[in-house]
Image 1 (tube, rainbow, N blue to C red):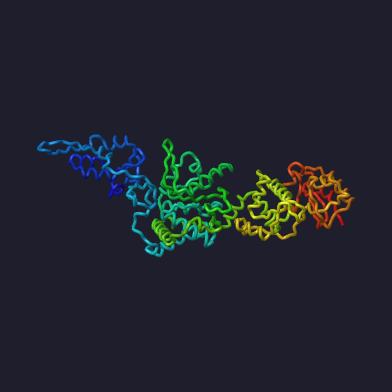
Image 2 (image 1 turned 180 degrees about the horizontal axis):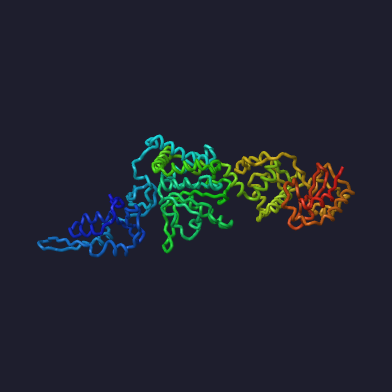
Length: 582
């Protein structure tokens, strides 16, 4: 069995010289093997540094010039057939010979520094020792009642500030931390979005200083470590904490999000040091993000990020945080917390950070904020309004375009892709519906729309649902073909001549249509400034909302009026043109 990395004493070259002078070859081999080993697939040697309880990589040239110098030789006398033969034994030659084994580097939390696999391959574990891992194993009950209560106080801090006292979320956080400390790389990331001052970072400081050790926790606000050229900081750490990453543009956030997803889920990562060739190693890093804004992009079925519902309940409570700081400075509390995590993880071996992730309201908010423009349009214009979809495809698409323009959505989905996505959502699409004069039609009852959005985690507890009767489509209004020309329809509604018109009970007579037409001509006002002030429009139809705002028309059959939608600045002007029908 190898003695490498087991000694507590630093390497002493004078002791080696003494052994050489005494011709103690066996002791020389054993002593050198305690401090140096050869590595496979790399032209370097590993040296054990007991004072730091870590390794140092040495080039072969440095090894032979500083440690295995040419004078480290033993002359041995052998008598063969009565003749004395002197042989030279070199420490350097022995070390690089096949007699000395080669080790494969690895990066495993909780494994011994040197171990042999079931297949007989020898490994050297680069991961640093945790703060309490070499101590005799304990349970939380082995500690005094006072220490146990202090450990509970620490857990309760996370329960209150990170989880708003929600049991399912606290259980997830507790098991995430426990399994991580027990040596398992988490394939999900805790993403905490909250205001400053609620006590997020104090727990990380406690982990680093009292629970697992300074070497294995990396805390920074420099996101370039994740998406820059050099990522050596990710080597041999258990936890990477990113605080308030200063990504100024959406593009930078997307790059960060893309890199993060790989680091979160991949079992092996590529490490690149400045001036060194990149190499691959085991991914031992678990991630926690602290932010007061959206820092990652969530999908509908997101399982890589968990965002608990944080609370500012304790913000500004100086007495509480003074007590918490005193507890966390107690090293025995840190050790008890460590063994408590080991015990919790071992008692829950089947728990999985992705499959057992609860659904928080913060996760729903993040999913909703990152939903496609089509989903946001349908949610806001139909689901929250308690309105089902029952309208012509072209009218529905125009309504979507207007929604995007009003909300300054930069990318508007093309009609072909729009139809494909609508069908994928489960909205019924009827091509050339016979019930609607062979027009392409969309149908979905509100209760079915609600189910779709609920399953997509797009309905939050703070969403306000309103109840009101939907405004009819302008396409549902019958035009009297004998009295109204196609030009009248174009000027009035901004639609083309092929627009199909269906029957409606309420309709203005010929003179009234002429008056509306005249009114429409007078209303050549720029509508662009009014768009931002629109709060609710039950129906708006325009053939080209981006180029022809002056043709925008709104019809309400219940009130039997025809009017332009106007903002505060235009209120008085537009009111003059409002036309009432008895």
